[in-house]
Length: 276
Image (cartoon, rainbow, N blue to C red; front, side, top):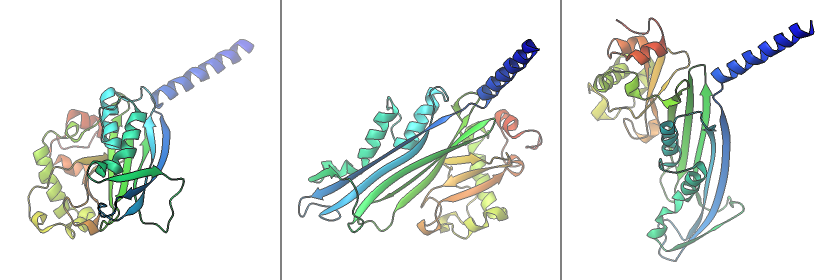
């Protein structure tokens, strides 16, 4: 009886271990914050004689070995605009210094401060990411926001990076479709023909209203139900700033009528996703 109980317990542990290995893509949260007071010499400041700048981040980073080396470089580039960084800490340190890149041009002094006085004029940079995953994919969603003192408005972005958990590699748009030119034509048609994208039609710059091909989207994300992909255009790319970031929905079965899907995409989206 004891032996049977032990075997059952051992089998349960083995099953649990297998399950963990299959769905064991893990991340760790990395947070930081840095505040500076920047003082320019009188008459030299581009936006005033002094202001605060706050830079902070809250990121999800894959644990060691969860992604391929190439995917890690892509994450470093997306997070910190530095794909050559040898480690996360180095990349974070460089990113935190980005707001002061104008020090070479303007004579100024900066010093850390414990807190920002809300009554003072200040700029900021903020970077945040999250990670969602299912049995096949891990999707990093990266948002950034910045404001420079004296600017008319802030800037922000949302970008996605999708990892195939089986290989640890990043999935790119050309891994899903065989012809990116046809994809750009399909995006234009999706904006004009599909009601799900009607709000985008109302915001387009005039140059894109009657075009038969949209610019190549720089980013995309696969929906969790595997029914569609969503391609994204940033601020000012195809619409005015006031319309924000644009997300064009491309239902997979509809898309396959206009652009042949790759064998990898057919496996990812499952039977019936495309017209043969």
